[in-house]
Length: 145
Image 1 (tube, rainbow, N blue to C red):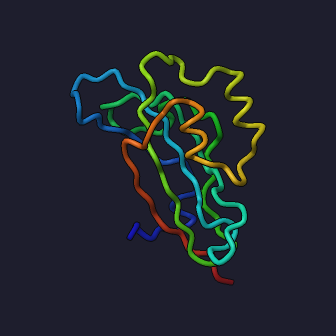
Image 2: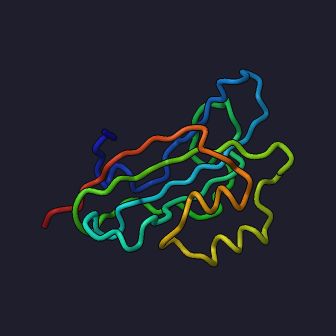
């Protein structure tokens, strides 16, 4: 199970880094998707996958830092209205030929789709990303009172 964190602890974007285990001197770049598969209610997730963050061009093998990469969809911290939600982070290796990964036109397409009912699988397929190279998740419960 993922770690249980508070909404307060996750309000700001995390320092994030990706280690490329295939090469210590890799020039690989990664795209990170953070989404909520339980929005707005784990019992009725009609807005799943709710997109909380889309980060591209994250260089591999660097010390994790806030502000690395290109934030295509700005980070919005978890604030579940009801129940305990899972927040999933998926890291995809970007194609070597795509630098920068998303052109301004592609960024506008992603933004126009909005955050509700985002599909990480459709996004990955549309941009030739393949399967995630890494994944993790954490959980945040709705505030009481």
